[in-house]
Length: 80
Image (cartoon, rainbow, N blue to C red):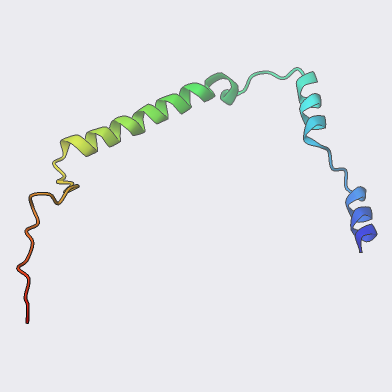
């Protein structure tokens, strides 16, 4: 079973990640959109989401009720 699987996999031209990276690094390719603007788009999207969540959390008046201290009164104990 192992030999059958190994032979089947050897028929396919499977390149390792190192081979793919070495071939890509030797090619002269022009910069595409992601090479030029990828980090800028990522940073601006992150900043937008953080600012939106900060605005939502602080400005629209949600009452979070994080701590029950002072809001919950204990009930009297019944000894019956």
